[in-house]
Image (cartoon, rainbow, N blue to C red; front, side, top):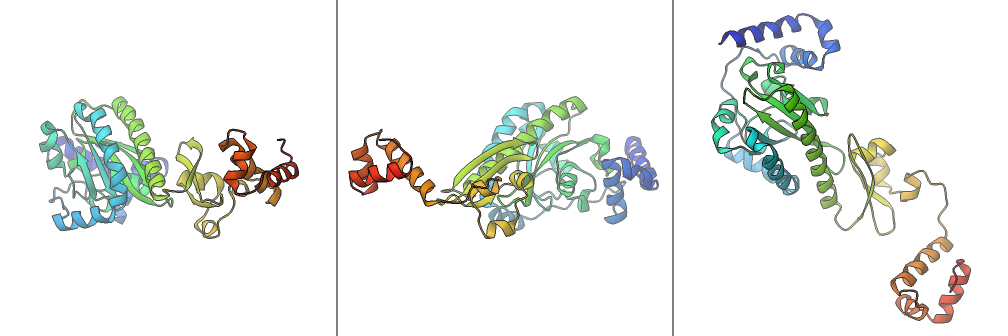
Length: 317
């Protein structure tokens, strides 16, 4: 063990012996979890465990819908950060790496660090680290070099963001890591912002893929992610992204008995046949370019009937 690694291990032990520090620092709290709950040794140099090819294949198959939308984002991220020596990684909710992008010149460093497909980076395996701590906290984190629990990981900088499935459940972590010495805190913050944005794009695309055929309603772009609702042909809400759930208080139980979009958004107006007629008539007239005869034909009714319904709905011919 190098002198730097020994000093880092001693610093971790001192922090763990001082519980007060855990209350004021998320990193210190993670160090305490790593030592006291997972019973890890920061000085350990034991062999890293990797999933075998069969286990990797099984996990990738189970996450096929996620990977289908994540792979283009991983490729785009690597084009943005790969030249600086960063690698891009996607793990499942347990911290097992499902896929990665690494430059040819950096493969050796990442392989030695265990940052490859099949690597296991939950807090239970490696202590405080970008992937594992992001998954535990369920929020973006930056674990820079000596903020890692294990001394063998203090040469790595990790920038991570959680990824949630279309039902708001934590399903993955998106990670960008660097093993280079010139990767400082300022660069970590800049890359961290890119990671957070990329994770939200994966969530958005996964949500739209899952609810393909539904009407997707964009409410906003909160710090927690895209606020999205999915509505069926009758304008009943059948899906909500995690950010939308947090904003509107949507639960799985509420989605089991779908509510109208307007009601979920706080509207009080009761449904009416008159409003439904008005909406249908306006849509038909718009599609017909304002031609009443063509609108009547589209609706399968006579022109006189169309005019009567338009008058009842308060529409002028």
